[in-house]
Image (cartoon, rainbow, N blue to C red; front, side):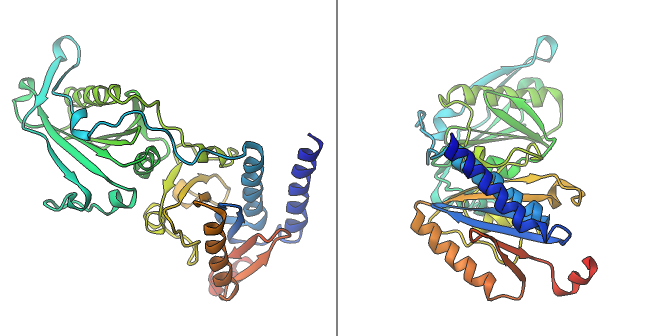
Length: 346
């Protein structure tokens, strides 16, 4: 306990020494550090102090929680088409309706995903897509025409399934419990459980159709043995001022660019299909959550892979034109403002 107390005190002492002279310097600050197989940091912090405290929060959690499991266990190994319900009944009394498959299910696998329709498959492939199955549902109560499309994606791992689900989430979104937390947005219901990402589209807006979509979601989730997904790496993100519903999981720089607009010009170049998580945090300078400060953590397969990425990142920012500060333990702080913007803060 004494050693642990000294560790925490040292972290906060280093933070204090670094930020005292920089407390009034407001800008667009990035802070990045490497520890073993982890690279972590902060984007869009308004001050060095806030950026550094984000680093301290991650350091504390890394030390406190120790090693995290690298992959969530899988119990359900069914092909997606085996999870498609033949029929469900939804609603009560006068609103009750039976929903049945309107045609035989179809499937995609590997690179064939969505080649026959105008839907971009890049996001699914970026999260490790393996196989998809889909079918439409109809009900005599609603004219016996297809009104609901159910798609089930095998994403290979539970982390990948949560990742593509998290891509669609946002703060204060409507949700419903179906055996896992499902996102309701527009005409879509989406959830992740086990290695499966499930997307259900309602073609028309009506209470009975929405009830059918929820009933189908519950029927699918009931067949998946895994509990709701909890990615251990997310627990390493600081909790203070975290914006609920902003958790994201990513595997590549391309996905990061799709999630966040206005990222720094230079970010660590992710390699070896790493596991990364991030979330948004409230600051006085942020007008909405999409502009808020972001804390991220990336876990690489091993320390050598992380060190290689960290070395390239450090060399890039140190030879660039941005203002760079180095912390007592090698942390990098970069003011991402353009030269024309800097005078606005002086």
